[in-house]
Length: 255
Ligand SMILES: Nc1ncnc2c1ncn2[C@@H]1O[C@H](COP(=O)(O)OP(=O)(O)OP(=O)(O)O)[C@@H](O)[C@H]1O
Ligand SMILES: [Mg+2]
Image 1 (tube, rainbow, N blue to C red):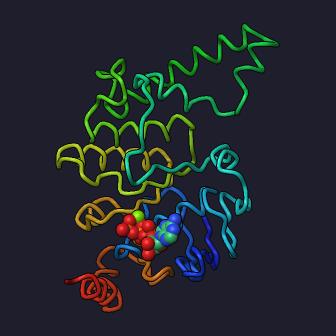
Image 2 (image 1 turned 120 degrees about the vertical axis):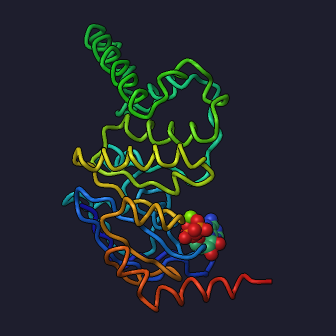
């Protein structure tokens, strides 16, 4: 579903991705793990078009997407969530979902001008979809609350809901369970498994290895801006190179 080849990215001369290559099979939950600073978020930024790549190829669902604008990549069916809860605008949960449901930029304006009945129908479909998504991520009971007022965990769920509004084939999740209480984090995990069971492909950055063990079909390990290894959870954690990558990092940051 996603094929990443030899991605290279640097910030002011410092190499952050140094030839990262790996592929993600369709209809799996693939865990992306690695020590802090390994380049996982940077890789998401490149794949989703937020960062220009110096070099490398990205093929999504059979089509090259490297260099496309983020909206084009979303339209192709690849969406991501963000590691840090971004500032939410003062909008209700419902309005927030509706906003991300409009796929084509300018679509509303265009159809409102030329065909108001089609626009009304589209609006009704979107509203239905926003409700479906809200029920799915268990936010229907707070759907009229301001997005700024819901809990941190609910914001994470809204971030997933927002991604689902684009009706994606694949989602990239950057630590969706970080800082969430254990009950909600199990809820999110169950959501991801059911999305996978319905055919979705998921690439999940997650530091909680127990969660990775529970829900990931495969695990890809990155270290120092490059691909280190892949396999089942048990295979990668037994790999001494993986253990060294984590240990080496801990030594490096130890006071
Ligand atoms: N905009 C930027 N400018 C300069 N350096 C950056 C920038 N973004 C990331 N980096 C550096 O790139 C490296 C990789 O960062 P990245 O955030 O991709 O790692 P990560 O694997 O997601 O780490 P974590 O697990 O802590 O989220 C780090 O050394 C980081 O300091
Ligand atoms: Mg990160």
